[in-house]
Each structure stands twice: as structure tokens, then as C-alpha cells.
Image (cartoon, rainbow, N blue to C red; front, side, top):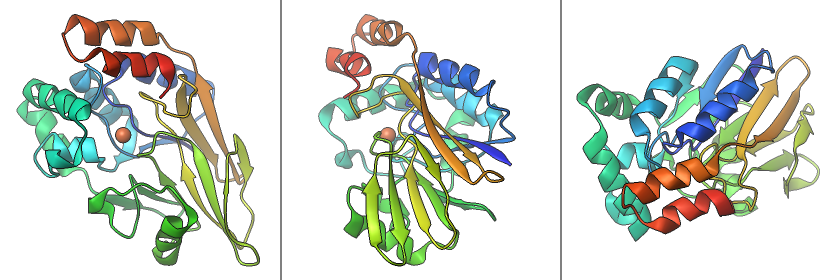
Length: 242
Ligand SMILES: [Fe+2]
């Protein structure tokens, strides 16, 4: 099985289209989305529709739940809040009920998906260090968990001998006995200094995980935000990758 796993699209249609196009060369059998379809950019409806058609499963992100009243706006910074208020006014009934229907955790025989952390998925905490990762490893029932939320790709590996180590890997071979938390990075608003859209491939037969990047027209995404009168910094972030 070759999984295409991606997260944090954030209404960025240009980035999503570039990732879908790049995946066409990867012989993907099943797509999975690790949340945050909406927020920040200005094509929530199109992104919901495309991911709904593409992904076999999508878990809820904090922006998805906040835009339908399931998570408090008070948890967001002023710019994210403004984008979310705008998003809320754009969704129709069907799109809202799709976001409402998203579950916090997805699990199958190969993997687990959660947007933030597994120990408190509804709290949407950031998996920012090994101490936090330990809590997810403790209750993880598969050997791999895919996450998003920080918008920075990265890996936590739990090895029986070494404990938990954190790494930045573009390609990772899965070894027996280890457990893995893979942050797949962000399609629509990367924050690791690389503005290219991030997407992940998990090949279960080869036991290999790859995080890839693809260029897209971030200037076009920025212009849409500026033209709508939304805060310019929301647009600048697509160019900066921060
Ligand atoms: Fe996000």
C-alpha cells in the first residue's frame, strides 16, 4: 500500500492543486488528510470539496472545528481569528456538516492519524518536543502516527534502546521494534522557512516514509488575500514559509 498523507491545506487551493499534481507521479493507493482544511487562505469551499473527493479519511484540525463552533476562537491569534471569521461566512450547510463530521483520531492496521497529540486530541496541543511526544507514544496502538498542526515536517522516533529522538528527515526507513510520530508538514502554509508545499508518502511494502516539497504560485495565493482586504501578513506568510 502506498499512502499519500498530507495536512494543513488551510484553504490554499494553489498549493493543494500542486500537491495533487505531484502525487500523480507517486502511484498512491490511498490518500489520508491530517486536518486543517480551512483557515488562513481564501478557497475553503474548493479545498473542502477536493479533499473530500480525494481522501479516504480526514481527521479534524483546530481550524476545521473552530470554523463550525466545535473549538473556541479564543485559542487563536488575532490574524488567524480574522481569517476564521471570514471562512465561517463562506461555508454552506453541506460544507459545515462535513467539517462537523470530522473525527479527531483515525486508525487502521497500518497507522494512526491525529492533528495535534493523541493524549488530548480535542485540545490540539503542539507536538513540539520529546516530552510531549512520549504521551502520544504511550497510548499509540500502531507503530506509526502521522500528525500535522505545527506546519513543520519532522520525526520523533521511539527506540527501545535510545528512548525518544527527534530528527529532520526527508526519507526514513521504518525499523522493526521502533515507533514513529511523523509530522507531514503543511500543504498550504509551511512554517519551516521553506515556502514549498509539503506532502508525505508512506510505502508499507518498502517500509519507507518520504516527505517531499513542491513549488506552487504562492504570489497568486497572496494576491487573493490582499484583494479581499484580509491582513497582508496572512499573504506574506505564503511567500516567507513562516
Ligand atoms: Fe494548521
